[in-house]
Picture 1 (cartoon, rainbow, N blue to C red):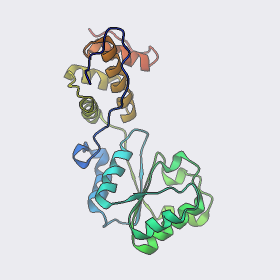
Picture 2: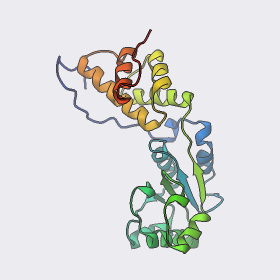
Picture 3: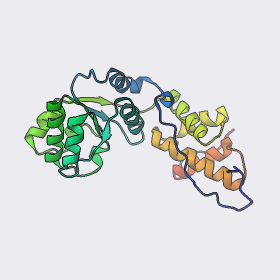
Picture 4: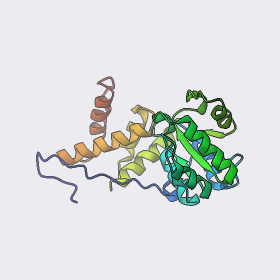
Length: 234
């Protein structure tokens, strides 16, 4: 697909599949605890692991890497499910974004019990630590206290820069280092924000048949920040 649409043409978003293999994982101190657990599998300190971190922090990428390595099957706990229990009895299972829906506490309790009794493993991802899940079932609360919880912190400047470069590369764009530095110094400090910024910059550059410059970056930062960022590039 050509990168330059005709004048005035609105570029269609056909999607950009992010690279999500182990080789594409950007390793940093904030991920070291999770990566250490992935590398140690199945020799985990407990059969149940919770990976907690803010939206866009890389939980899905890490879960995907672990699932590929372990052969884990994704299951749901929004209702009692015999298939989920059967999968947990047969091998590793994965439950993503647990805090984003009203999960069934009994279903999760039985899933954890099946994992423990069968000698398999379970990884769960969440924006919040288990203590903040408002669990009312005492037996489930006890099981969650015994789980190993690892946290992904906010990205530092170096990691944000690496992530931006990777996101641009996913779109076949080689960004100017000055643009990357400008974005890192002014953007919201999250990987989700990095993804939104790159998508918006790519869309505007395509629509205008222009390069991704610091001026364009300033425009997008100002747009995302509600006009509160000074766009002066001098």
